[in-house]
Structures are given as structure tokens and as C-alpha cells.
Image (cartoon, rainbow, N blue to C red; front, side, top):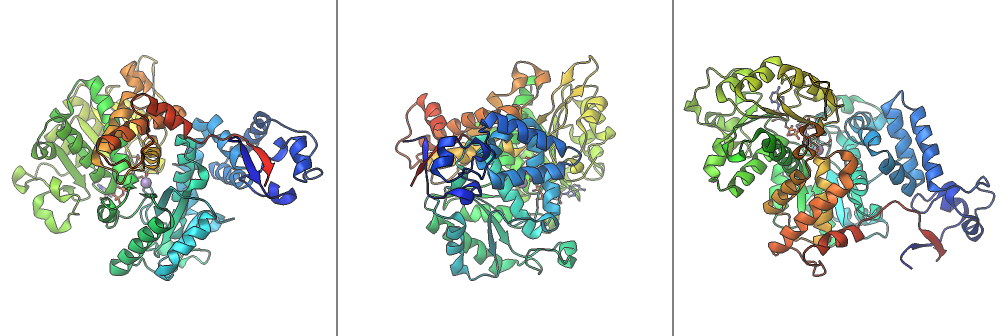
Length: 560
Ligand SMILES: NC(=O)c1ccc[n+]([C@@H]2O[C@H](COP(=O)([O-])OP(=O)(O)OC[C@H]3O[C@@H](n4cnc5c(N)ncnc54)[C@H](O)[C@@H]3O)[C@@H](O)[C@H]2O)c1
Ligand SMILES: O=C(O)C[C@H](O)C(=O)O
Ligand SMILES: [Mn+2]
């Protein structure tokens, strides 16, 4: 009986069980069988009627996005199917509430607005041999296939949020269900509490995390190792997704484990893939080749260097040499352009891109000087520096190129390098733009609306996750990530009509994720990394992937 769910709880316990609860949609038959008569008003409703009511309630909170976020979280605790179905029905309106930018605000206020815990809390102070048991307890009896974890050090662009970082894990997990149809009970959201260097949190009596400075060095590394090993033991074949780790750990941790198991850093690799897709889509319009492009990346941290690496991989795929590919990228950080004589100041990820110090630093003091001198056709921002793509910078981009590509990617919205409407104004409508957080369309001179696509890793990581799980891939290779970017670029609406945006609308993210997953699974099989022997050949893969996706629908309950 595939569409039935076994249920051993009755009465109020059933109504309080979010996984099984249907609220007013319980049929009279179910009400009799599970002792629900009298606990519900008599009118039996359809899920559509429930959605209408829930949407009205959501609208009543429209004065405050944070209240809407709390309302949706409350619904999640009450009725899982209704929560996801409501989100699915109003995805464009609700994504900014459960994800960037509102989730950023909710994380900043985590301890103050805390009502009930969600996810699995692991602490660097607990004995390492208890991590496995803790994760199993949080997973209940479920077989976990995917873990999203964060140590909370670099949340979006808002820095160290300590224990509140667990909410980026839960938000990203919710999106996996919504955007790719992962089964909600097979994902574990983990917060790795390693202390915090956020003095405001340490001074705050209400703060719920460990009240000490961030632990670094050997103890941190041992904690992460124990966490990864415990996860592997508890849940064989699990994929681990690292989110919003700090710059000194993100890449180190990824490199440590990426050959050992299927794991993935969203800020490095997910951002790399989605940004590469936006660039490929934009180059299609500007009619320039990637390997002939010049790229300036402003903000050379976790995301910036991840994007650089994805671009280099793509150029190599287009027959460039690695050296030539690297020479087309300029990393700019707080110090300005990064040069090889700054060696002590550079992170390992930045070093390969450091320019020869003899290139001439003097005439490149500001970002607009850099643009004037280098004449890049692509400018990317992951700096967290609001308004850094100012009028000078944008005008200079448009002076150098007929169709400059400008991607201000910093999140949340308050940190974005430029408002799309300003970029369009300053470049006289020439720029090809996508942003990290959602923005409304911009009207250009001809009263034509230009859609500003969201270039957020949410367009790609759900598909990556789906592919990792279904292929049972032993690792996530660079070629699989490249396949994801190419697959996403194939779906660019701008191919048909450039005013429709460089990347698919989030409204279509579910079919986008399926398309991306299919491409990655094929690549995993081709590289011999997939351990799943049941993957069908050729065109049937899409149907098989769809069959394995979860959808929010009430199932018939049967007594256990
Ligand atoms: N759109 C997306 O999908 C996406 C994905 C990941 C990250 N991001 C955003 O990118 C931003 C950076 O994230 P991260 O994880 O790389 O953080 P990070 O801390 O690893 O990197 C930030 C980098 O910006 C540099 N920087 C800070 N101030 C600067 C300034 N005034 N001028 C130049 N450089 C400056 C820092 O020195 C650092 O190297 C965040 O706002 C984040 O939300 C967006
Ligand atoms: O979480 C997001 O909105 C994207 C990204 O992972 C980020 O850190 O900004
Ligand atoms: Mn992130």
C-alpha cells in the first residue's frame, strides 16, 4: 500500500504530531478510527481550503516579515504537509520569508525569539564519543541520507551568529524538501556549537549557545573529524553539506573530507556552480566566450574563491590551459587587487590567483580604478560591502563593454553591492544583472520590465543534493559540479528573451532541480562514482528521479 502511512498514535497525540497531523482535513473515517471526534470542529476540509485559510493568516502578519517567518515555523511544527504545500503554492512570495533575507534577521535574533528547538545541537564541549548517539537520537528512527551542518561562523554576510547558525541548516533543509523533493524525514539539520566571537552574543544574558570564544586549532579539527566519522557510522552513505563556515575553516574542512565521502560546501561549490550558470547565460547574450573573458571578483572569501575555481574549471573544459584561465581572473579584497607579494596575508584559496606584483599597483587604488585598468567584462561581488558597485564602477563597466555582466551577490539584501535599478540606470540598461537575494523587476527606458534573476545557490544545491542521494555517489567531483552549472544555464529564460532573466525563476525551482540532478547523476555514472546499480539508462533517468521525489500530500493513515 504505497500511499498509506502506518500510524500508532491517536487523539491529541496525533494532532500534535506534525508528521501525521492533517488537522481539519482528517476524514470522518479517520476521526473515528484514531479517536479524533470532539477534538476538531466538525467540518472536514480539503487541503486547498486549509491553504486558503493559512494564506489569509500569513497575510495578516504582512506588516512584519519576521512575524511571517514565525508563523510559517509554527505551521511547520503543527502540520508538515500543509507547511510544504503552502510554500509550494506561494513559493515566490514565501521564499524570501523562510530564506534570505528574512532568515538572516531571524538568525540574528535567534536566542531572543526562540520558542522551540529544531535540528540537532552538537557541542564542542561534549565527549566526542557521544556525537553519534546524539545524532541518532535527533534522527529518531529515520534513515538519514543528507546532513546540512553549520558552525555558525559566517552566516550569509552577517558574520558570527554562534548557536543561531543552526537556523541556516534548518532553512537550507526546508528548501531541499521544497525545491528538490527530498524526503523531509531523511535530512538532519545540525548546528555545531564551537563558541562564538560575537561579543554582543557573549554579553547577552539571553544567548543560548556556549558562552566562550570560538575554539580553534586541534580541538576544532578533532571535533569536526569526530562529527564526520560519527555521521558516517550512524548513517552509511550519508552526504554532508557544509554551510556558512568561516573563511579559515570552510575550504580546509572541504578539502579534508571531499575525497573520503560525498560532501559539499555550498558557499564554495554551490555558489560557484550557480554563478557560472549565470555567467554562461549572460555570455550567450553578450556573445563573448568565457575563455576570452576578464573577470574581477570583489570579495575573495569563501564564495569569491569558489566562483573563481568554478570559472577556471569551465575554461579548462573549453580547452584553456589552467595558467591562462587563472590569468583571466582578478581577485580584489579589502587590500585591493591581491598580489603575490602579499603572500602572508593571502588564504590558500586566494594564492593561486595572486597577480604578479610587477603588474603595476599604483593606478589601481579603488575598485573603479581596477575596472578602468583591467576592463573586465564580468564583475562579481561577494564582499558583504554594501553599495560598493557605485555609479563610477558601473559607468566604467559600461564604457568598456557593450553588455557588461554585473553580479552583486552579497546577502542579505542590506549588504548587496548595488541595487539592480541603479546598475541599470548607470549602465543605461546595458548591464546583464543577477543578484544574491530577490529583487523586483527593473523598468528600462522602453517601459520594458527586465527580470532580475536571483543568482543564489538555492537554484543549484537542492539538485546537487538530490543527485548525490540518488546516485549514491562516493564523492562529488568537479565535473559533476560543472555539469550542474551547464544544466542550469540550459534553462536560462534569457535564451529566448533577454528581459526574462539570466536564470530560471524560483517559481520553477522544483523542475530546475530535477533537471540539474539528472545531469549530475549522468556525470557520476560516467565517472564510475555512482554506487547505485538501479539507475536506469538514458532518457528514463528523469522519470526515475521524479518517482523518487517527495511531494506534500496527505496519505491515508492505517492503524499500526
Ligand atoms: N548568492 C549566493 O548564492 C551567495 C552564496 C554564498 C555567499 N554569498 C554572499 O557572499 C558574501 C560573502 O560570503 P562568504 O561566505 O564568501 O564570506 P567570507 O567571509 O568568506 O568572505 C568575504 C570576503 O569579503 C572580503 N571583504 C570584506 N569587506 C570587504 C571590502 N570592504 N572590500 C573588499 N572585500 C571585502 C573579506 O575580506 C572576505 O575575503 C556574503 O554576503 C554571502 O551572503 C552569496
Ligand atoms: O543562504 C543564502 O541565501 C545563500 C548563501 O548560501 C549565502 O551564504 O549567502
Ligand atoms: Mn551560505
